[in-house]
Every structure is written in structure tokens, then in C-alpha cells.
Length: 158
Picture 1 (cartoon, rainbow, N blue to C red):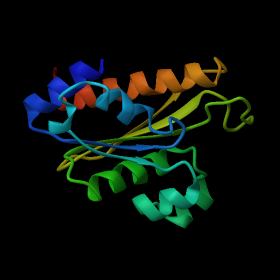
Picture 2 (picture 1 turned 120 degrees about the vertical axis):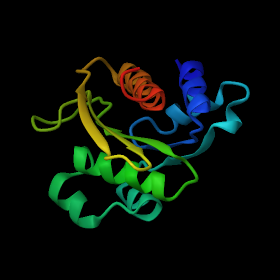
Picture 3 (picture 1 turned 90 degrees about the vertical axis):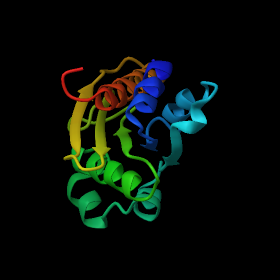
């Protein structure tokens, strides 16, 4: 999947940035595991703490207080911040509850995604992977993020 994502971004002339919380850098690692990825990958922001989200990506305190770190509002601000603070034309952001644990309002396996692309409206979505275990949630998050990047790089109708 990472190879396909890189090829699509390369063909579209796009560089990629990531903003990761619950995956701790696994998305950028998947991309950079591929030889030759340096012409497509710009940078990855690992923003596990709320303060890192604020400092590195410009996430607003007010948004964190109102919606919490695991929210589409935060995923949007993370993706927008990664795009603005990089040389990339495409950025994906993830924030979620990998587990174990969670709450009634934010259950284990909930991950919010943001996808920002220069000149386009930032897209957000939430995936409910369920209580499948921390490692499985993180792997599913990486796969979904790569699919989002691939789809965006391929453009509409691809």
C-alpha cells in the first residue's frame, strides 16, 4: 500500500506530510520504509501530547477544550497545520483511542482522520475499528491513512 501511495503522489507531483498521534509515527515509517521515498515524503509530525499538537501544528487550545483530542475538529487542525508547516501538498492526520480503554463517548478503536491538500477543502472522517487491540487499531489506522493519501493523490474519480 505504501508503494502505491508513493507512486500516486509522485505521479501527481505531490509531497506528503503526516501528523500523527495514536500511531506515533507509524504512517511516516511505512512510507519511508520504501526505498526512494525521499522524493515524495517531506516530513512527519509525531504529536502524541496535546501540547505537541499546539506547539508543532498550531492546534488551538479552544478546540482541544471544546472537542477533546480525539475529534474531527482536532484531526482537521492537525492536517491543516501539517500542510502549512511543511513543503508538502498533501497531509494526513490521525488522532484516536488505540486502547486499551476508552470511554462511552470515545470508545477504544475510534480514530479521526484529516486529509488536507493545497487548494482543496480539508476532509475529515471517523473510523470505528472497535476494541480489536492496540496493535491492530494502529495497523488499521496506518492502512486507512495510506488509502486516503492514495485516493487524494489519484484525484477525483480514480
